[in-house]
Amino acid sequence: MFNKILIAEDFQDTNKGIVNALETRLPIKTMCGELYCDKAYNRFKAALDENQPFELLITDLSFKEGPVPRRLTSGQDLIKEVRTHDPNIKIIVNSMIENPVQINRLFTEYQINGYVCKGRNSLDELVNAIYEVCQNRTFVSPHINLNSANTVFELDEYDLMILKDLAEGFTKKEISQRLKGRNISPNSESTIDKKVSRLFDQFEAKNTHHLIAKLIKQGKI
Amino acid sequence: MFNKILIAEDFQDTNKGIVNALETRLPIKTMCGELYCDKAYNRFKAALDENQPFELLITDLSFKEGPVPRRLTSGQDLIKEVRTHDPNIKIIVNSMIENPVQINRLFTEYQINGYVCKGRNSLDELVNAIYEVCQNRTFVSPHINLNSANTVFELDEYDLMILKDLAEGFTKKEISQRLKGRNISPNSESTIDKKVSRLFDQFEAKNTHHLIAKLIKQGKI
DNA sequence: AATAATTTTACAGATTTCCGTAATGGGCGA
DNA sequence: TCGCCCATTACGGAAATCTGTAAAATTATT
Image 1 (cartoon, helix red, strand yellow):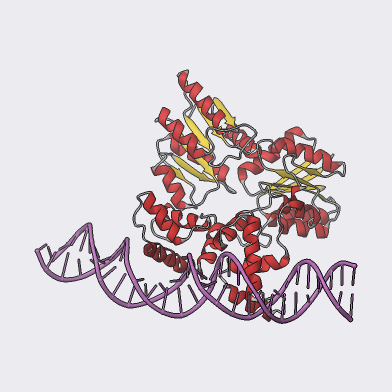
Image 2 (tube, each protein chain N blue to C red):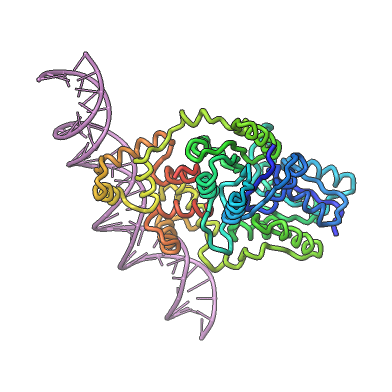
């Protein structure tokens, strides 16, 4: 089992809840709960430099702004920094995000080892996740279906870019220009039309207003 | 100080965190943490019927869907039910919402006694809130400015009808027809155009897509 | 009652959306 | 290499949005 665990979570009640639960349920020597990404990173780095590195990082993804300016503003930022300095540390993300595409990206792009989705069992799942990750296995909350990221109606990177731009008031002509500016293909207005029309069918939306409203309410954009 | 406190919060870690913290920091005899609105209500009602009512309800606002069908699906639902059966119980809302308009409505419309905004001090704030509410005072997290709720652009009933219809994919022509059908005036397409254009200015939106996205993200529609 | 101010409505035009059809072009197996 | 499939693109037309201006109706003021 791990000896040193670092926890990054900005909500005080949740932070306390996790630390307390793990302290009572697991035989961990050092457990450290931080409320800021930057503080978590500093503690991680100090331990690494002292040759007594943390073996596991448990982190949320979204962190509220605080009174002090921040360098690392999200769990993703923290993970990226931590990974570059220590490829061996295990990372479990504990967040309320349910979108399989985003979760998938955490594994492939950010090389995390486990994902626990906040909910009514998330403490129990977190304990399981720690056991699994400790044995070099990965863990994902059971009700999350990562396969659906490929099959079912999920939004890929490209869809997300278009939808987010639409939700920010860009016209399709402008979006086409923006894609060209970033050398992203396909980028014709016609293709964007087609993509969005397909999303109308998939999400049963009457028009763009409806589609944007639905997806935002579902937390997908 | 209160003898019986009921806590409704669907995230296991947060729920545990709150219950643990209050148990160690306050001299409360009965503390009860529930993960579902319906279960919280049942427990509340049972205690009330036994003439040993809970004196304080601490509740979140948003509750995830679970495996079982729900009657009460939100903190608002729960509060409304509880208030109708027991006008004396104190209610503190513990949520991540920061919008002053929504928070204001909780006090005026739902008659809550305190609002604690989840964050890096929310446990400490919650303890303070309990002391305040216990002495028949109200409490609001210090960084929330309820006064700004008055200056901020509010949406009246009419605006809301139009915006909700737009978000459901109705065209302005259709909305005009729907208003006429319900004998609501004004109802011309032109007036609807004007109303929405004025909202563009007020909310600094480029077009309808942008406006709908902004308002949904702010929880206003 | 008369006038002023505001709101509602009509209308027009430029732009954008939405949804067809069809042309273009690349990848891949036979 | 040929032919086929599919994604991309081009284009066109009907409908909808967005933005003006101005007339009509309503409300407020004196």
